Length: 247
Image 1 (tube, rainbow, N blue to C red):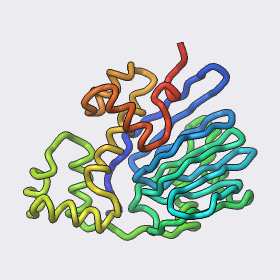
Image 2: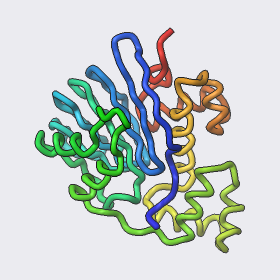
Image 3: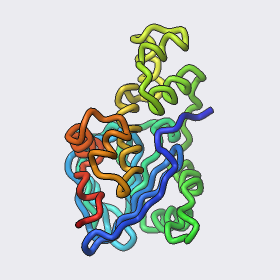
């Protein structure tokens, strides 16, 4: 078994002034599509991100001494602090960290690779984007991740789909809390608590735009609306208002 559910299955689209934003997700992949150029501020997400401009470029600057990448598209590994800007409409994919082969650098994509990824994804299909096909295309570019052992899979599922304490989860799999946290971190490369926060952000985004920000925060298990706002800025470099329908 490769992993667990971090993204609730969901889809929505909205018009926001002169922009259109669409969101779709499966249990292991989420997609944003947005019209117009856009810039996200400095952030660090515990997932793979793939940025696919439809007719332009993406510019990514990181904090690890890597040179700034300007390309037709880019794959950003988990836990890399960076800023990101596109010059056109774009599609962004977020993929669970264990599903692709682990490495730490930015991977620029050629225009031909972006076209193939978009063709596999087919974001314009009336039945919804084919996220599984896009995931398969990513594996050909990056490589598949290692299969998680059963205790790690169970811990990630339990920690990201409910409010169960990590100590209680550790007891269920026969480990101490520190040992479970270390095992997950070693296996996935991401702290278990951070995976839980990422899953909660995904749940909150799935609830938009049908709920108020406060309602979405409560639904997803955040302490309050400011906690959700801080998390969105930290993990995806966006404000919640940028993902809501303008009044």
